Structure formats: C-alpha cells, structure tokens
Amino acid sequence: MFKQIFGEKINKTRITPLTTKIIIIFAVFILVSNLASNYINLTYNRTGLIKFIRELLIRDLKEIYTICNTQYEIYQYNNDLQDSVVNIERNALGQFKNEKSVFLGIREDGSIIFQASKYPKSTRFSDQKTLSLMRENRKQGVLEGSLPFNFNGDAYFGLYKYHPKWEAYLLRGEEYNEFYAESTRIFQNISLIIIIITLFTAILGTVILNHITRFVRIITDRIMEMTRNQQLEIIDLKGATNDNITFLGMAFNSLSSTINNLLFIFRKFVNRDIAEKAYQERQVRLEGRELELAILFSDIKRFTFITETLGTDIIKLLNAHYDLTIKEIIKNNGVIGSIIGDALLAVYGVFNEDGANKSYQAVLSAFKIQEIAASLREKMRQKYEQIINEKGVLSEAEERVYQAVLIEVGVGIDGGNVFYGTIGSHERMTNTVIGDSVNSSSRLEGLTRIYNVPIIVSSYIKEEIDGSTPDHGLIFVELDTVLVKGKTVGAKIYWPIRRETYNANFELRNAIRNFSQALSLYYSGDWSKAHRIFREIPFAFAEIFKERTRAECPEEWDGIWRMASK
Image 1 (tube, rainbow, N blue to C red):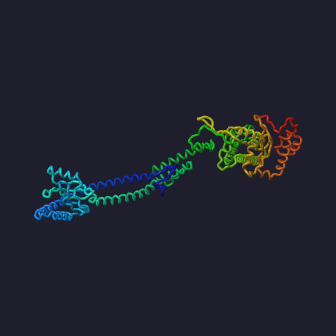
Image 2: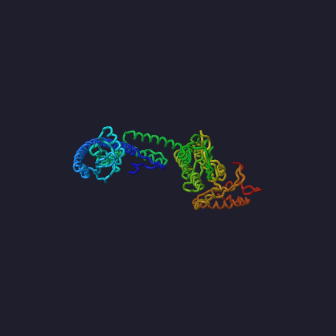
C-alpha cells in the first residue's frame, strides 16, 4: 500500500505514482477552493454582523446617553458626583452580553470619568490617536460616529457621542476577537469538515484511480524491475482496458521485442563481456587491457581434404561442430576470441565470477571438444552402417564424403599475459586477444599432428592447475621439450588425460609409464635404449620418437627438439 501511494526509490530518486500526483493536485485545488469560498462567506457574514452590532451599539449608546442626562440632573440636584457615576456605570454594565464589552466616558484631556467594564478601573484613555480623531471631529461639528480603538491592549469596534453636560465623549465598544469568536468557530468547524471530506474523497479517489490506472502501475513496476535486472521483457497486459495506457504498454512491448531481437542478434556476433559493457556504458570504445589469460586454440585436421570433398556443405558440418563446441566453452566461462574457418580461438579468465581456475576450465573445454568430435564421428559411422545395410556398397565419391565428415580436432592450450580488448576503427571494430601465448597455443595445436595426441598444453597450464586446483583429476603426460621456430628457449609440452581414463585403461597406463622411462633416456642421449622401449609402445604418441631414435643421437644434443617450421 505504501508503494502504491508514495512509490519507491531507484538510485536514490523516489518515483512518485501518477495517481498520487493527480490526487494531491485535485485535493489541493478542492481544499483551496472550498476554504476560499468559506473565507469569502465569512467575510460577507462579518460585514453583516458589523452592521448588526452597529445598530445594537447605537441603541445601547442612546440608552446610556439618556441615562447620562438623567444622572446629570440628579447630580445637579444632590451634588453627589460619585453616586451619579456609579449609577451610569451600573446601567451600562446591565446592557453588556460579552466579557470584554466596554463603556467609557472620556474627557477632552483623556481622563476617564466613566468606565463600565470587567477590566480594572483606568484613569486615562491610552489611545491618543482615537482621542485626537474625536477632538478633530468635534471641532468640525461632528459629535458622534463609529471608529476603531484600543483599550487595555485589545482592539475594539465602537460608537461614540459627545455629551456636552458631562463634557465627555461617551464611547461604547465591543472587542473584535470576542465579537468574531462565534463566526471564527463556525469557520474552523466548516474548514475541518471540508478537510475531512476532502481526505475521504482523496482516499476514495485514490482507490478508484488506482483501479482505473492499475496498468500504469503494472507497467511502471515491470519497467522498474527490468531496470534493476538490466533485462528487457514483455509486459503482461491481459485484462487491460482499451485506452491510451494499454496502447502505451503495447508500444513498450513492441519496442522491447525489437530491442531484445537486436540484442539477441548482437550477442551472437560479440562476446558476453562486450555486450554487457555496451549495455552498461551505452557505447563500445576502442580500448584494451593487459590480462593473464589461458588461451585455447582448436583446429580441424584434414580441413583442405574436407573442403575439397564437401564443397559448400562444409558450412553445415562446421555449424554442427561449432554449435556444440561453443556452448561448452561458454559453460566453462570461456570467451570466443575468433572463428576463422576450421580454427577457433577461446580465452579463459576474462570472467572469474566463481573463482574457478582458468587453465582448468580451458582443459575441461578441450576434453568436451574432443567428446563432441567423437560423438559426431560415431553418428556418421552409424549413418554409414545404415546406408551399407540398405545399399550394400558405397561409391568412391560417397566413401570420400564419409571420410571427410569424420572430423578430428587438435587443441593447443597456453597461458600468460596478453592484450585483450577492442581494435579497429569507429566504423568497424572487433574484439581480439594479442600476445605470445596466442601464437604459442596455435603452435601447440600444430604439434598435436606430430605427436598424435588430441590435446597439448604448456608448462604454464600444468603448473597453474597443479598449484591451485587440488584433486583436479588429471594426469599430465610429458611429451617432449621443444623449441619452435621463432623461439630461443625450449619448453616442455604435456598431454592431459582424465585420471579415470588413466586408471581404467591398464594398457594405456603401462604404455605411459614405459614412455616416461624412454623419454628420460631420450633426454639423456641414450637413443638406442630409448628406441627399444618406444618400439614396444603400441600407441600413436610414441610413433614420432620411434622415427627419431632410429638415428644416432646428435653430438650436441641438449634434450630439446628444434622444430624446422611453425
């Protein structure tokens, strides 16, 4: 209820509901108009009251004037001034109906000869301005009239008449506030009633307006929620009336749908971090930063043969492969750096929301890539067997197509400091990653063809996983120490295997142990002994060493194999 009336805060700014503003404005207008009407009515009534009290004061003053004449005659007869004054004051008091009613007899010098009131007796009339006015009027021959005056600190409305025998101004007055008290009380009561009625109608109006404009609230609440979530959605307008508010909601839904479609398309062409930055900053700048990332490079083997065989159908095969591959990369917090035909570059470490090891995520993605390729090959084999069962034999062209769709993927992974950011121009820009680790991951992928393993990683990847990911469940098989073209320092390369695969395959486990033994002999220069062991290993990763160790060990052998090409 509080939110419906006073709204809620967004970024320290209170969003006031439209209905509340409407009700407040109308309530203020109603209050001002009603109170103004009441005040105007009071003013007119007071004008009438003044006329009425004037008539009463005239009557009272006439009676007092007559009494003053009578008492003056008595005073002339018995010469008892005090008795005449007391009688005049007593008769005047008998006419009074209010607490502050007053009758005064004021001489020219301001001394008071008569005072009929409930105030203490005063000897002088303090309102010199009023006294001067009465004197001035008398000089001009005006002996009576109405005027305001002050007495005992209060403001009065009064009538006066000069009495020549007593040589005094007879002044009869009523105090303003006391005289207006009843009309003021009526004004206050009516004003209170107006306020209560206005509040009641405001509450009732709020309820009615909230119902009528409920879809304004629904629309604004949903927009506020979208603002907090930074996600545009469709507003449910079921049950909305056919008015401009509903049309506004429909227009927003249309705009939201259009923007979501654009964002959906936008996210397909840019990485998540770029899309989020563009949404938050409302722009994409040409900028970059240095980050420590893990770089994964994958490449489809025999791609030239596949392209020549499939022609334009290669697109379907690539999409089938990439659709599954990219999903797995993104699941492991990977960011797609680029896709160039058969090659894919992904980086890890841009997002570190769950604190996962970037190198470990890259290796897990590599395993998934191999599983996806194996799954596609299995599907192709099943399709091949189905066709063989139906046709009995395939033509040479069909056999060639079958061989082409049996894709194999090599993956190389390295890591280190790289430049990650946006390059290009303001007209056309692209997200990229630049650094030695990028080139190295590509070369490691190339080595998978030489060493006949699906994945090769660098020492950086192995050491980061071993150092920060306990129980990672991986076995890193050291393959060789190589110096690729363009480098000056040799580097160890490793083949990662899942521990469960290693433990479950006795033949593989035994072969890897023998390979490690032979590799030590290979490093030390005893190639003949190494050759005998390599020759007994029935796995493809030993083939390259069988070829190398058939020859004599070079005289200047330092345990590093130098690659002649990239």
